[in-house]
Image 1 (tube, one colour):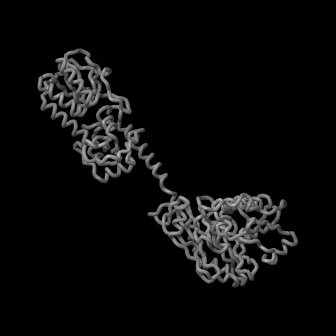
Image 2 (cartoon, rainbow, N blue to C red):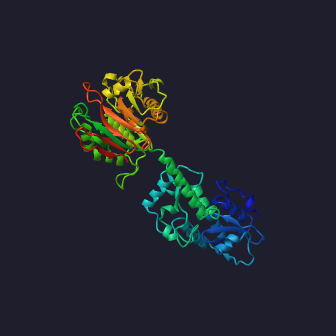
Image 3 (cartoon, rainbow, N blue to C red):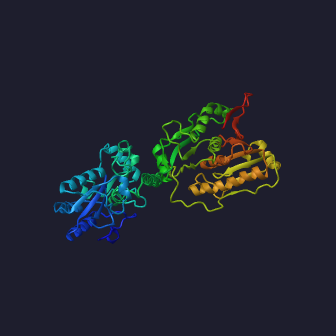
Length: 531
């Protein structure tokens, strides 16, 4: 008598507990050829086959198919096939035949009806049919791959037109029929629930339903599905560029309108492997006449743009403006504004979240970094000799576009420098030029130098006030503002130069919590919170 261990079992990715159609057909044919009577025991969709008339003969878990069905019908016609129906509990516990079982003769028609009923349970059963919407959700969750742990077979290559060509199956975890594999009282309810359905290849679909149902519990399959769907999401999320909010800081300078192309801004963001969320937001936009030489200009400026500054603070926060929007991963800043505004905007943005700063290239007329440009050699941007003694006030100038002449300083600052009562720290470039920041690496080099200057001023000099003057590309001024930590920096007096005929003039003041502008006409200072 052949036993299960002597039968060649098709190798499958998991532990084998049943013989499949082809092997069963061969076994049945061999037994019949030897003149033996065989029987099959069945409980719902499950089947075991054994030889009749031999004590302690092993029962073989089987998965009948069309080939074995034909052999079973053939021996049924010769009167050599018996059957017995068992409760599922007794079926699972039975390893050998029970002498008390009553075996009935099995006719070919009975075998055919039992086979059809069994196949119906493996198909859709009596539950609700899987809808196209549910099927699409399952395919999406699976990423078109078999969801059996460790398989991942691509199931999208062969058209699902006929059963012969079918390689992908929508397999229920809890069967759509209570009598099906892992069926229970929730079967009908869960029959069209995408969370209860797995995309599987043919081999693993047969494995979990027909070959090793016992080894594939509801809990195990749900865990497989969750793990697979989570991994698919993780991998697919890697395709998407970080969600990026585009923000412009623009002003019409020297009576020249400043306009930008939204397409150009989006392409610049994409060139940095960032995904633009929407059209750019125009923050602190100034289109008024550039009349910085008039008295109290900055006092009026702060009054006029107070709401713009507050809006900018909200725009760069982590929360989306509307409930149907997603929070950005990155802020893309396109700065071209007055020097004090650039520093303040950078101070508001800070370094607590990811910020990508772009620099407009006047020669190429684009915001995209020049991929053909080589970064400036290390040391091109440097800092002057730093004082070593503590001071109350210090001048800090950023001179990457052009050198600042002492005569352009306000009289009181120039006097303090000449009298050596106030140190002047200068950040310079070996070749000052408006286009000296051509690559993101150039901006990175500036960041290192500026961070060093700030650290020395705060930690070593312990200055209480810094007079900041900037003649430098917009990206560097915004970046400098980012380096100022809210609540942890001295007072910064920001200066502006209306034109070459004027000296640098005091503009705005920022401390740890607010920006302010004084009026020379005796009006109350204008202050705006930066928190």
